[in-house]
Length: 280
Image (cartoon, rainbow, N blue to C red; front, side, top):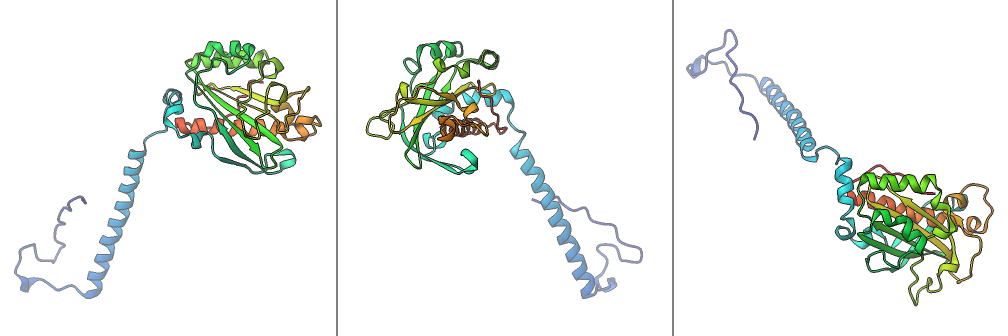
């Protein structure tokens, strides 16, 4: 509803409101048209301004870091699996030499606790954060030559606890230790059926600080070959690296799928700023 208009006082020489009709001068058509355009223009400008103010009020400010962190603990049951782990992930220009990559989801693990989901040393390293839920999915690349498990552990820790764990992983280079590699999720009757401990070739582990979450990914060859020289993804993706994980794109597979899940977690929690907080 528009604001009511206050009547303007009569101009000099014009009859006052209520004067006999004979004493009024009939305005010309051009005057009436100009007045109508003026009123219409003012109305449109005022309406646009009011709409802008209403939109700003309705949208409100961006959620606080505390609100995003708190919401992050609930994303595992508030967000569809196809949102956190899309059926198909397109990575434009993220492969070796800027090549495009495409990954297709072939298995999703039931959400669970963390018991038995890690090798003992990694489980011990992550234990201070606690575990609310563990989410995992496995992907295969477009050539069906590599398989990648990506996971997200929702933790019980508060922001200070996540910061402390991130600092410990970073300062002690825990993300680079081969005895702290994540385990694959190998589902029968899929290209990842033979993806076990011995097949792990590249990996990344990220302890986030703006969400109560640990994101990881681990990659290997889909033909089940054992691998004796695994390399952290952040090292395997460096230009000029000639190791087998680097040249096969296994480092890119692990890093880029972890990047995607990390971004999707933040979006689901209401966060916007992409970060890369790998713990290696």
